Length: 156
Image 1 (cartoon, helix red, strand yellow):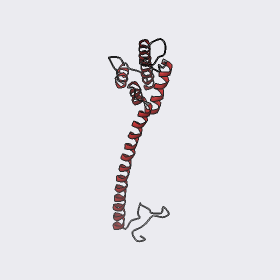
Image 2 (cartoon, rainbow, N blue to C red):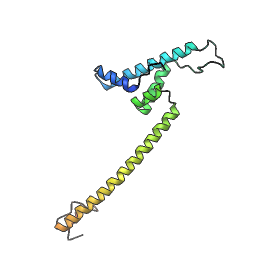
Image 3 (cartoon, rainbow, N blue to C red):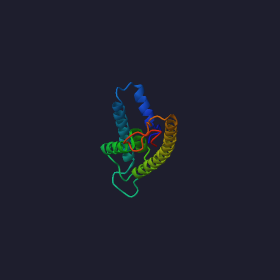
Image 4 (spheres, rainbow, N blue to C red):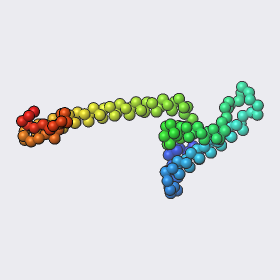
């Protein structure tokens, strides 16, 4: 990476400030800028490497700009535009990205399970209150157990 690293968020914010017409244009510009930056880095590293392959080379696999662009798109499609671009630019491996996303999804699923349990408790409480109020009033219940016919205070 160059001495002046730019985060994806900074690029997106800069592009938003330039009054980009559509979010798609912002994403396309971010992809293009990130691909160009990756391509420049590949060229810099390749220039530092010797002309003939050897065991002492610092860079073993130099990818062309088109491959870097495709890899960036792969990350963005799999992990979202912002996160995928950030992880790609920070050199996070594909496997590490998958592990990070899996952990995030597990946490989100657990949070949703907890929220669902709370909502079920609230629903049961409210249903009980409605049924008690209907029973006390002698009116037809708006809450039906079977869906066939509404309950009344006299037939329950």
